[in-house]
Length: 261
Image 1 (spheres, rainbow, N blue to C red):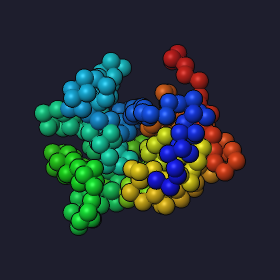
Image 2: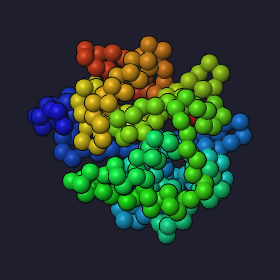
Image 3: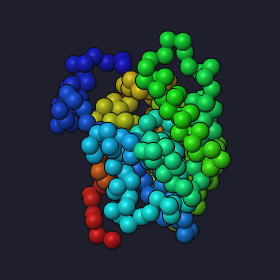
């Protein structure tokens, strides 16, 4: 939002991406911790899978292929309420997609999207759709929805952290196992070639772009200083890497994909 189309095209070209259109990958997370099966974010969902002829909404198909039953998931953690993160919470016919799961969401995120007073009179069609979608999905889920605050253990070995800005309650997670840690950063960055390399650039989908930039810089400074592994929902598969500083921003150093157990 704060750069010219020419600047954006140049950044994409430098990263060997096409300039039009931009393709994003969606990569939810599955964790096994202390005997619990945990999902973090759910993709666009089965309805989108049908509508797009399989281009989007592939998570439930891939979950089954990987040997997991959605009915066996104990807990689902949500970073924020955009369609590509909550769409997979319900089936194409409007039923809970994880029927035996607790659904844990950021309290600040829930409070924002459930209050119609937060929608500006001149809200865009996309913003109106976000409000309507959140109300529909969480209306279906009902009492299975639990709310969490920052710095709270939301599952065994998983702690929430506030990374607000992309949305008012956007949250990330720290997953710890022994001395190892990985940050599940959700949409702190929605495209690594743009917002990691240029953390001061503001994305159109950021509800509060200034706060989003502040959260991005704070989190990435910590990741660099502590040499932490980071998972990005929109990073190229396997969506994990490390960050280094470069000029006025950062650079993503992807890990090598290893299919061996």
